[in-house]
Image (cartoon, rainbow, N blue to C red; front, side):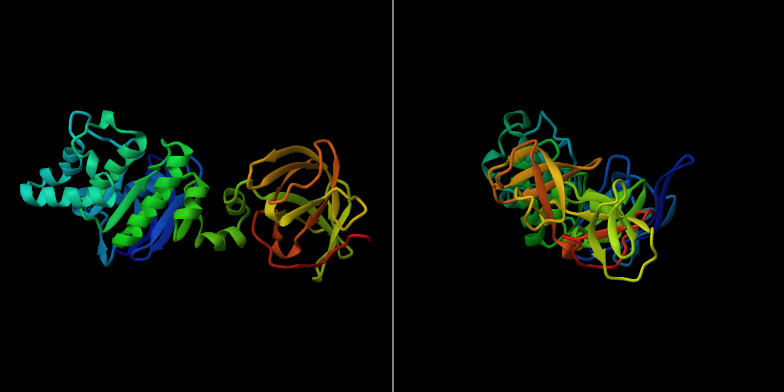
Length: 364
């Protein structure tokens, strides 16, 4: 099912929760609505579900306008954060509940329940009650109850936030596998950028009810058009260094130290932000070696598969991700090298500037 939101807005009283969203979700895609609390992502999901009607704009499923269709007529399934299982019913009866309400035949209900249970791998749990299940098993029951309706659109409202880290990872891959195997369109709401990056065909990043960006995960990660998007995607978050241009040199705004040269004819004293992700900085303990600036190492985190180094550079905190254990100690001065080809630049309004750093000012 293709899904379109055309100039969609939702207002509660005089306050806008969603402002003029235009979004196109292709048939069979997993679209993720990502953003901080209060950004409008759940409100958007509830408009897709039919719980809320848009104040303005049009929502289409395929060629059909669904603004005034009730939820039961939208061919959707929904999975909630809190599972919403009936404690007095067995797993079988919980999954069967929407079919029982439709007064389907017992044979058809049994067939569909067993098919859904097989898909989410809970066939052996059908006689149990919810209290006898783990959190991950309850989430699978909730997912099976949505799938048993054979939806054309699956809506997921932060379904993994109540699970521990290992179960979240497992259920991320399971939901994605099921969605791809069955081929339905899905919309997932989350504030967790790891979920968004690993599960989405496309991510819609929202802030204050506004759609800030919509695109493929790695496109938004590598070339975000706005500083907010760059900051929201990535962990540890992207580093920012405020700089200004003078006679072709990039100088830090707080000290005037030169850290690079710019190869474009720009006006002097222009100020902007140089932004670089932690994996695109490298450290050296040799202060006489090849580096672009010197910082102080304050915290070193060994995570097994990688190391995170927290640095202070002037008044700013920077983070470096490395797969190597660089021989530096906390409190030590370190040289930092920038991978210029991965650097992003943002103006004072947070919009990305399209020019490239072409050579280093190291040694000048």
